[in-house]
Length: 509
Image (tube, rainbow, N blue to C red; front, side):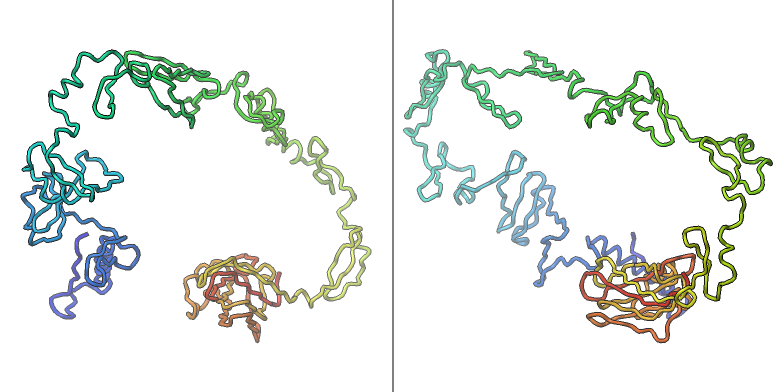
């Protein structure tokens, strides 16, 4: 994104500049790009410098390249003392110390693994300058240093005549090998008796080591079940092929094309009741029988429904008829539906004659279980009753909120008392939609009028706190809900559960 410039107008308050919202939107965009491109996570810029003002990139995202295409392009080493640079034409790394000094590198272009520097300063300073005396060798000293020294004739080094005398000879016999005898090299018989060393020493297969016993030992490869071995002596290769079937073969189901199931001959792998929990190849008929159950039957690989279904003609023939007599009911006969006489012979409620006119105000008509009716007085003064319900949140972090439901307070109620077991913020709502809409409101901010907040309580005590509500607060549920939605915020200072008990007068079930 290009930098966005805020329009400030031609003069103060001339109305031609950017409005405040547009201006600060540009400011935000510019800052967001700075934070994003600095590798920042969150809202804090990465500090690339330590307290002394030095560049500090430890554990911070960075990429600093000191690259030059040509060695001749390097700046003056005296000006950039201590700098490190790479030049592409030499493929080397240099550091500035009075001059640009080339560092030792691995010419194989591979990683230097477990590298330990065994050489003294003689190798790294002015000794290797391509001007050493011819035939000098690097000699070790007893103090761990190295010295360039003249090659000694008696040290075991060979001139051309020595090579001809000891190595390029025609007197070596077949199966002899060149061996060191303690003072010189000589051709001696092979101790193993072979014309060459062991063809293989150790081959590890599946955690088992196969070790050659002698130079004539032979490694045999044996084909197992459904395996074919093909050897080619010209290319020195062995081809291992699977014949399929058995334990490792089979058909790749992903490669199959869609087709029609042959009920008579196709099969499928699954376990049915007669397999004793052993997987085996089953026929389509077995599969259908395994699926069959209530309302379904299987026969010859075909799954059928045994549920009686009615077409329009069946409905007209059995239900929409004019022959049904008064007081008949539609009944299942065991095989079909039919209109039959009611068991009582009439629609009169049995036992009503036993009641008479003895009922009084506040009583309801109830049955005693035997078919008779009686009047029963309703307790609690017409249905209103006191209820107390305690609910506990799941474990929530300090400052986090959880939603709970109270099922026994009723669709309308009068709040009498709220008791909490720790510091918290309790909000009681008329419906779950109101609780959801109020979730972003902060503690201490009053809810909007008509927002569905019935009551809220803030406890600042460390232990149990009881809020007595005098006079009572009336509450009711909206949107056909049956449980009172409540939000509880944990203010205890640590993660845990919060228990809230609500006492109310239940006015409506």
